[in-house]
Image 1 (cartoon, helix red, strand yellow):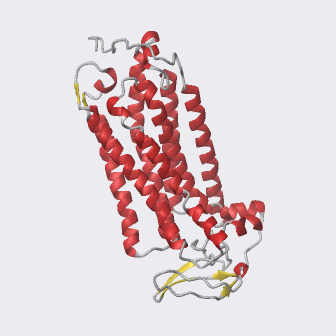
Image 2 (cartoon, rainbow, N blue to C red; image 1 turned 30 degrees about the vertical axis):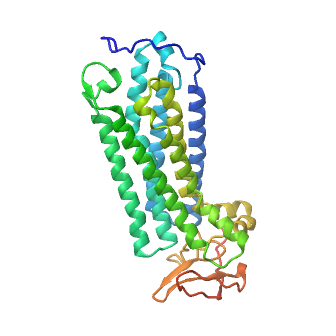
Image 3 (cartoon, rainbow, N blue to C red; image 1 turned 90 degrees about the horizontal axis):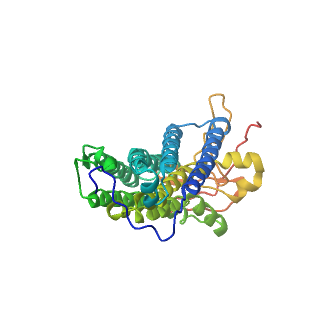
Length: 361
């Protein structure tokens, strides 16, 4: 490295002056726009249709703010040359390399928290709707605590790896840790994030699969609640690209796919947390076909508000799981006739039929 802090000119890339900045910007903002629409639909459904706004909505709101900040920082990095080969930035304006690295460093806390905070909302949703036993609740929340604790460690190490911190993007003076240390910590955090996503997606499926119901409906419900596995796949893809943090020599080019998958993962996990709450809105827009096509058996309904009117908060075709001293039972709605439903581990079943009148809006 030269005394001015500007890295020496490397050999020119074989693929020429390729710039994926515009592509990166378009993709992340399209995903963000779709996620915003889904989150807004969730808020409308829970505020006006089910009257059931809760803390999980606030947590997702914080996640959306983090997502906006992250995308804005990515756009700034693209302006300076992110997703373009470092060679051509050295030729045109070497200072832009430092700007790209600096803005990516500043965006790391937002990106990391943006991928972990939505999982809290998903956990709140699962524990509220499925009402698992204490051991399962402790397990799911332990995953969140461990993941967020490790995420904070990664955020701190990102800023203390160089002394002074500005050495990280200026490459002038100071000292820095071996980049493999930070890269390995990031890989571990990514693996924990993926494991948490899969755990939150698979657990509801294990409960649903033991129910005696039409196979087609069972598959649809499992797919609905298992959608979070897509976030786990995105987390795996993102994690596979973290090794470049320790070995990359063309960071402005090599980072862009990592940045892309970080944003995609955040959007997917927020979407996963919103989808189960969209059923009342979908039924209002499309009518009964949506309700009959996507039944659920674990969404608790608010039986009545203070005026005694029933609103059926997020209740779906098969009713809701109820906890009692004898165990859990599933109420079967009139739409499913006298079908008998049973849960695993000795939980008793009922064939009673219950109907509720819904106020016309």
